[in-house]
Image (cartoon, rainbow, N blue to C red; front, top):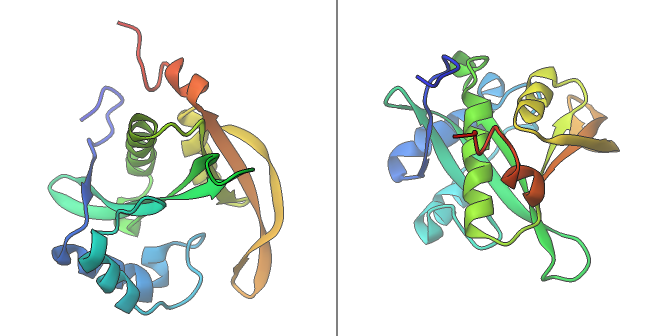
Length: 185
């Protein structure tokens, strides 16, 4: 357990043994989550990509969230370009299975992903979109030091209508000076 009483999490590359998790997220609306569910998906592309590059590429990726010796969800990232192709940041997201939500796992897993992305790239920021009604994810992002930048109107189609999203970001300078990521000695 962490100092805050939350379970420890690890992020690991996906293996063939994790296909059950992707299958569940693809066919079970509850597993995908209210704010992530956009309909049933075919897993053929996921299987092919897992074989090709383990779901980790230069422009995007997906890792499995582990806690208590079991896989409990996924975190993902993708490059977002602003200006020229060499200027980019990362957009992140998490999907935790319903029986493991509201325990701090999503916050911890996204924090671990932020550390990883800032460590392995020169990106000046990490950003995340979340539904304006997703109070849990908004709280997780704020606990990590993300700042609300604004509203992206009519951006996500879910449950038969277009929904607004909030955009949050964390800059490299905020990350480097954050007591969340770098506690005082």
